[in-house]
Length: 402
Image (cartoon, rainbow, N blue to C red; front, side):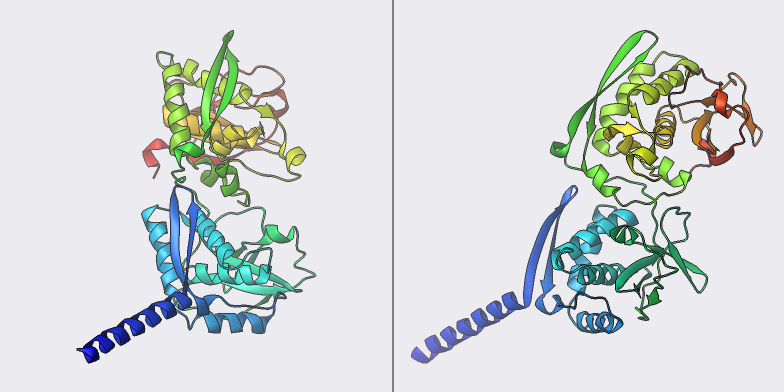
C-alpha cells in the first residue's frame, strides 16, 4: 500500500513539474482589437533579442532562430481572428502591428519590432521583403495597386510598396541605397491589398455622438452622428490610394445606422433632384473646410467616416462622402471629375439637369459637394473650372458594380 502511495505521489510530482515546465516554455498574451479580444500563446524561444542597429546578419540570425520555434501557434490565433472577423489585408496588418508591439515594443527596439512584423506577415502568406538602407530597416510588401505617396521597389517585374516609410519621415533612396535581404520564405507569395471593403464592428460603447447641422431652403437641420476615434487610428498611416478604392470605403455599422436612415427619411417624398440637392448641401455646409496642404502639409484623402469625424475636410473628402451617400440612398451612376486643383462629382439623373457631361453615352450633371464662391445649383460648374480641362478618374455604374 505504501509503495502504491509513493508511486501516486511521484506521478503527481512529475505531472506538476511538467506543468511548471510548460508554463515556463509558453507565455500568454491578450489584447483588445476593435470588436474582439485576441488571445495567443508564445513559446519563450520565440522571444528573440536582437541588436538595435539593422544588419543583414542579424536578420538571418533572427529568422533562423524563430523558424525553429513553435511560432505557428501565434499565427493560428491571428489567422483565426482574421477569418472570424473578416479582416481585409489593411486591417489584418494592423493586427500584425499590434501583435509585434506586444512581442517587441517599438520604442525599445524598432529593428526588432519590424522583424516581427515582417515575419508574421510573411508567414501569413504575403510576399513581404526587407532591405537595409544606411542603418535603416525598410519593410515592403508586394502590391500592384495605384498608390501615390509612398515609395516602391521593382523586383523581377513585381512592385513592392514600402510599409514603414512613415516611421522615417522621408528617405532619399537615391542617396541611401536599400540593399535587399535575401531570404526565401516558402509560401509567402500573396499580393497585399489596400482596399478596405469592410470596417470593423467596433463596440457600441466606444462611440460618441457628434452634432452636425446645415441649412437648406431656409431651414436648419440637426443631426447626431455616432463617430469613433479608432477610425482615425486605422487610417493614420493609410496611403493615398486610387479614387475607386477610397470612394468605396464603407461606414462602420454604428455610424451607418445613425446617419443613413436619417438621411433617407429626410429625402423621402422629395424628387430625385431635390433629394440629391439636399445631400449636396449636407456635404457642403455640415463641415468646416480646410485644404490638406494647410492641415497636413501634403495630400491626404479621408474615407467617408473620417470626414464625419474630422473637424476639417477638403474637396477630396467631401466628394468621397457625397458619392457614398448618393450610392447608398439612390444608387445612381456617377463619375468623379478631377481638375488640376479640384475634384467634383457628376450624377446621371433620370433626366439631365443643367449642362450635362456626356460620358460613355450617358448624361451626367455636376453636383458640387464642396462650398464655392457662389451657391452652385445642380448642373453648374464653378467659374474657375469652366474653361479648365478635367479627367474622369472614377466611373460608378450600378449595373456593373461588384
